[in-house]
Amino acid sequence: MTTSPEQYRMIYDMLNQVEVLSYDCGRLCHSVCCQPENDRDMGMYLFPGEEAVHDQKDPWLFWRKVKASDHQFPDGWPEEVWYVNCYGPAYCKRKKRPLQCRFFPVTAHLDEQDRLSLVRFDLELPYYCPLLEESFELNEDWLEAVWEAYHILIQDKAVYDMIKQESNDRIAVNESIHITYQKED
Ligand code: SF4
Ligand code: SF4
Image 1 (cartoon, rainbow, N blue to C red):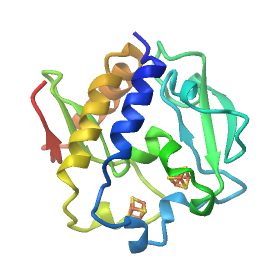
Image 2 (cartoon, rainbow, N blue to C red):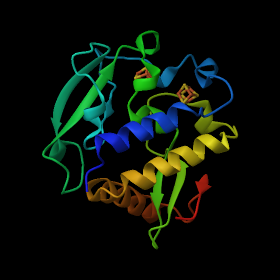
Image 3 (cartoon, helix red, strand yellow):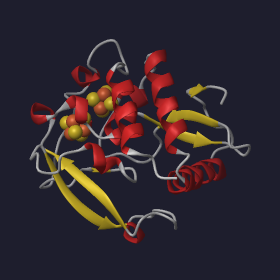
Image 4 (cartoon, rainbow, N blue to C red):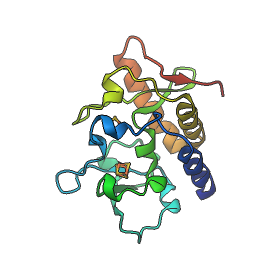
């Protein structure tokens, strides 16, 4: 079942109440993960249906559709996926930033029993994120809100399949997975 616009609004509201640290982590790195580069090369995929909570006429984001099959999305994803770029922190509408921005630097993990947890983002990045590379403690209320958001999102089979695929890849190359946050369903 695709996540409804009401559910996305609820997730956005919930995540607007929390922050990953008690101060802006962009101060640690000049917001390197938000810097547009290579003519807006860096951007964010939206989750299925997430576009419903955005006004595509608002020019703070640049919108385009990409083919799911060209970007390693599992079967079952819509044929086309929204991919948005922004113009950097000075123009960011923080309360409307996409979920991919809000979840970084953690991501969802499903173990063999399908228990949902959060792990540090572990794909290769073109920049140094202090929250990934150094021993910062992430706010518990932020972690709980991200976990709750993923818990809703994985009710959509397409999202579940994507998280499961990434988790299986992680399990295949890691002897032990370091869990950042876990909560009982
Ligand atoms: S998430 Fe990491 S890279 Fe992004 S602003 Fe915070 S510390 Fe910097
Ligand atoms: S939308 Fe905001 S949070 Fe997301 S990459 Fe752009 S500046 Fe950063």
